Amino acid sequence: MKSKRLLQIFVLLVMLFSPLGSVQTASASSSPAPQLDAVVIDRNLNYWDASYYGFVSSGIYENWRFEFTTSHNFVVTVTRMSGDLVPLVILMDGSGSELAHGTGSLTSTQPAGSYSFQVQPESGMGLYMLTLREVVVPSQPSASTVVVPTSINVGQTAAVTVSLNNVPMEGYTSAEFSCTYNASLVAPGNVVVTDLFGLDPVMASTTPQGGSFIVAIAGSNGRKATASGAAFTFNVEGLQAGQAAIECVARISKGDNVLTALPSTPASLTVQSLGDTPTPTFTPTPIDTATFTPTPITDTPTFTPTPVTETSTPITDTPTFTPTPVTETSTPITNTPTFTPTPVPEDGTLTGKVLAGKPVTVSLYTDETLVTSVAANADGTFSLTAPAGTYTVRATADGFLSAQGSVTLTAGETGTKPEVTLVAGDIVNNNVIDQFDALTIGMSYNTATPAAADLNNDGTINVLDLELLARNYRQVGPIVW
Image 1 (cartoon, helix red, strand yellow):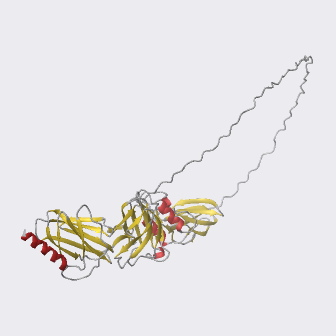
Image 2 (spheres, one colour):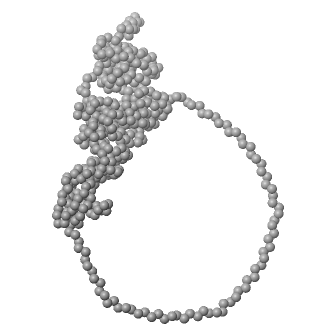
Image 3 (cartoon, rainbow, N blue to C red):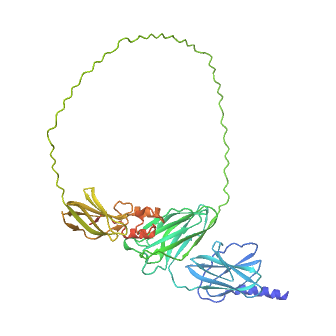
């Protein structure tokens, strides 16, 4: 009995004088509500790399509160000091929802926010020592999703910010974010792109459905993302109570037609119910029914038909028809027609080279009338022949601005147009590269049609095609050839 009393006094002294040690501070935040039937004692974690002591049993849990002002990689270790304790440590967010758990230790990466470690016995009871250490890892590019606030009621909205972190010096030309969410708990909307990729960025997005949507962003006219920061934001509305995970996984391009996936940090949103809403009671007002008594009709009209007498008169006269004879006289043709052939002008030849990432067609027009056309070779070279004369020559490729110029073909001679490169991005074929073309990419994302939107001709419409479009954003055609 005396030893038990001494143990209780020791536990009380430990709780009064912990924590011990100091390196870097971390302030406290609100604690979660007690769980099960155990008494939960709130404690504070004030320092990194310090030793904290506590006592837990089946009826006593301890909850250590702390707050991050920036993202941290960390490991928490709970070591048994006495008894037969097997400690369980649970990482929770500011609203008390579990994020992760581990027996004896736990390693995690979390963005800025309020958190707590709850220590409870997986089995047994006894004294323990808790240590929180920051894990120093080399800075590497990543994506993160943060939601503010972390708890809302049904019908309220929260703001979600998606960021790129540790962006390298050479920067990114484009990025694709595949976002997932619990469609039964929240509904996203109002996507807004920031200027992380420079002024006038180009954006394509899919419609949120089935718990996912995609946002693709590319810097226009050579601009890049060269610093860390928010790439875009959106809102989520609470639909029903529950814990909703929200994550946007990023793939980036450095302009080499290759997409590289980045590690990502998700966010968690708690949607709380407002309780039962009383259902209004509706009592219909009775409607008086009018009584209608029809008046019987007693008079019956009398109708007496008048007899009709029909007398037919027989036809006795027979008409007489006498045909008139026709006399036909043919006049012999004595003149022989004379045919004078029109001389055909001799042809001339046009050659040249047109570069594009897709098949090219070169055509000759008189005014707007097509005279002839030819498909360019795989290397862009072409040769076509037409009667001598002056024409408009036009080079086209699916999804590219056309090149156009004037050419005069001389009979028996070969003319050559200078090499020209077509400009990618005119998907809707209206001679301007704009947001309507980007919209088509968003509507066709991760498909192969329409072929005009597959600008790099790799069989998939995605952010790499948007990147090609963005290089030439707001250019107009046709290109002078």
